[in-house]
Amino acid sequence: MHTSRRGLAAWAGLLPLSLAACATAQADTGLTRAGFAAWLDKYGAAWSAKDAAAAGALFTADASYHEMPFDAPMQGRAAIEAYWTRVTAPQSDIRFSYEIIAVEGDQGAAHWRALFNAGGAAVELNGMFAIAFAEDGVTARSLREWWHVKAG
Image (cartoon, rainbow, N blue to C red):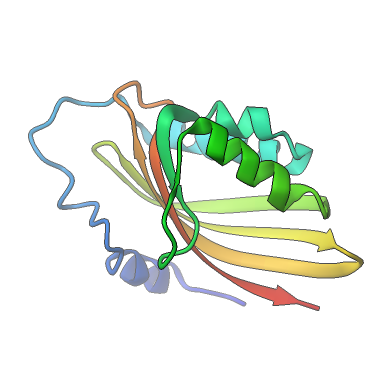
């Protein structure tokens, strides 16, 4: 699947968590494009290693992780680590990539893809992140994701 940069930017404009609306007069969080890329690199490394503790360390102690739009978010680092332990258990040969869409204030949006094997089947995920960071610009306080799966 090929998605144009214009198509991704238009999609990002539909995110319920509007990045432009979040650019208020609040204090600068220190989130930069390079910092967001570093966070996404660590997220991908934690996923590839199936390291729930490394994934949990990317979030504040009271962070929310909203995997599905109609489900309640997971609350707190312990819940996030338990989720990661459960969902990565059957996965192998994990590859994660991303493209940053926007960084604004304490918010970052990215398009991501993951390829892995699960139970002998090849799985491809294609999704979007909307992430709000703590004031340190290093740990996430809220993650919302939307993704589609192609198994084959």
